[in-house]
Length: 146
Length: 137
Image (cartoon, rainbow over all chains, first blue to last red; front, side):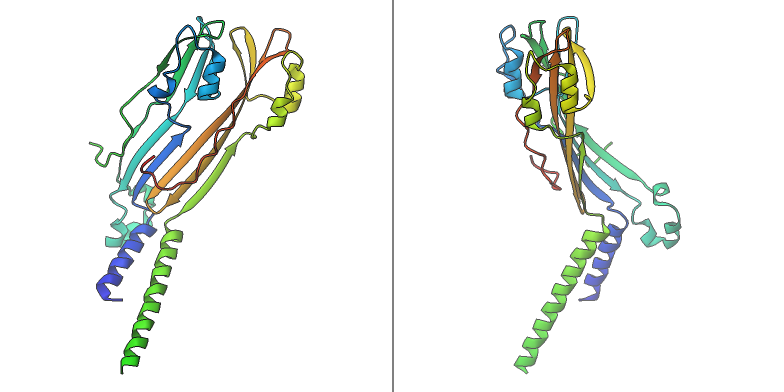
């Protein structure tokens, strides 16, 4: 292998061995529920059983003064991380004696998606309404957090 | 002469292949590639759930069959046993990491006498996938 290629390969390997200075991470909890998934709910008519058959068993059941609340939890987190100082020990080997957690300069950026959908029932388990708690913009990776 | 050149090229290809395999293996092991699976709670056995009879089974029988509930809640004047189970699969390869988590819940409703009035148990969700590519769906 030619020397520049070998040096480049060693550089890449060394950077990777320092613990992945760049990372795209994603965490997904359950399936996303969208407006079209819940359009079948008709306040005053749709029953608890019908909601269960379409959306599945809720993640939480809560009580309220009006009646029960079925809550579905879902989450989509996208995050981009880069450690700008991860290559420092390659330039200044003495720095390697400092624990890595003390020589990090991380930029992190990302966005969390909407995370709850709730159906409100009356005491007879008839849906009276529904709501998304936070219907934020779509999740996305953010390379520059400023 | 030509035969020497051919054998030299083959030798170079073998060396290049070995270097590539070594690099991939090193990258794969040194950078912390990982596939992790975690579970919280026991998966529900449909036979256990079907054994719960509305109007017949009692609180004690349900607890004996399914174990102690993860939560006991009171909703709409019903005492409810909630059981839940989480399945997590996570993959990390090089710069990419993806974690998928799915939850499954079971609710058993009781009346004031401690007898089952309803069971909410949907069809099991498909298990989460092992993925490491964090883009797309």
